[in-house]
Amino acid sequence: MAREAVVAVTKLLAAATTLVVLLLVILTGSLVPISVSKAAVLPKDRADVMYHSYQGGGMSIDGPSILIRKKMSKNISASFNHYVDTVSSASIDVLATASPYKEERSEQSLGLNYLQDNTLISVGVSQSNENDYQAKSFNFDLSHEFFGNLTTVTMGLSKGSDEITLNGNDNFFEQAEQTNYRLGLSQILTKNFQMGLNLEAITNQGYLNNPYRRYRYLDDASASGYSYATEIYPNTRTSTAGAIRGRYFLPYNAAVYASARLFSDTWGIQANNYTVGYSQSFADNWLIDVHLRYYQQDQADFYQDMFERKDQFNFMARDKEMSSFNDLTVGIKGRYLFKFARTSWAQASSVNVSLEHIKFDYDNFHNVLVTAPQGVGTEPLYQFSANVIRFYVSLWY
Amino acid sequence: MSKSLNTRLKSFLVVLVLPTLFACQNTLKPWVKPYERNNLTLAVMDWELDPIANGYRHHVYQAREGARGAEGGSGGGCGCN
Image (cartoon, rainbow over all chains, first blue to last red; front, side, top):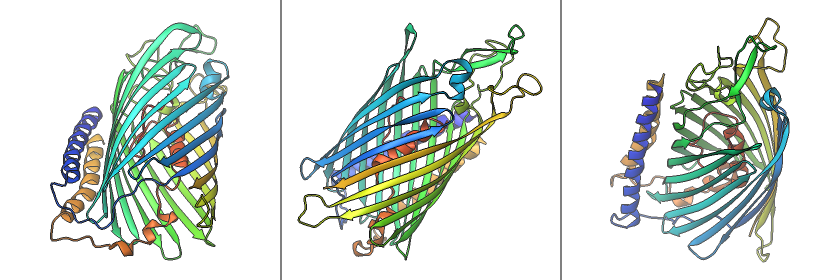
């Protein structure tokens, strides 16, 4: 039933996307006269350098990210992003069935924006490299402002292809493909209030599991009472997500905002998350932001913490990301803005620090690193906390 | 449960799309004038104040949660399985 619902929503989204494309083609072709008070603009020229860090659950991931954006002409802007994850992993998944490891992932993205009147067209390519995972993707996005620039419609398409190998097994080679369909609407409702809606359908085909992950099953022949075997995932997945968000300006140079997202996929996962936040500017240069985010999901159909026997079902997973769990994020961010003289080549710069604390609580993923008090499968439920740091400097020129 | 989710997604579509379609009618004019939008251009009202930080935040959650998409970014295959 969940699968049918997801497929139905995906078809609905595809039809809506087609409708919007036709609408945009008509509008951008100026077949319909539109009253325009102010044209859309290209993204501002800027450079950002960021250090990011994630520490939690035995994982330590950090590295740099650099983003540069520059106008090439009145209508064209280009952007480049270089991103690195340096991973040191001793997570519960690794400690249960393998040995801690270190690796590095780097990603490069190149994008072009083209502005024509009130329409912004964006294309981009991206590649990600790990020693056992190669991913390439491209995206096409279109954004159009109309109704006196109070309304913005966006639509986009991405296609990605991945190549998966396995360290220690030269014969292992798998592939996977992903397609994203996006549709968005942003609406200015009053001089202090704006809202947005985003829909996205994603389809995957190919090898979709992590080849290092294992499921566990009861095994009397084992001293622990259970053994592990390689997970088996379905080789297709379709998901739909819908999100709504709003931001309201308060008269003392502050804003409150909130967002909600619903998610469903053909694997039986249903999820929702909610965010509320508050931003405050003061003393002309400072901005402080605090936010709360709550996420909850129900497990995939083929997830179990303990299977009764090896090869019990066609599909079997014990990834904690496929289990039922929730997480809660508390975050704070501070920013200081330097404004330069009009004669300077640069307009402004900012220094930013963002700290987030995330607490994960699993409903049916047990901590196998702790002895089961009353036999196999009675280990305490797993939980962990993570700290996420972003420190970055931005320059507008 | 799945049926209600489907219904809720459609409701989302209707809640924002219908007003916009009505807004396209000739009888309705843009009601917030350009000179009234100063508050909306301030940093506290910007969803995408710093794209480099937003992209990273989405990546942190995508790698650890089953849900994905509809977060406003252009996204693609991220190699974060």
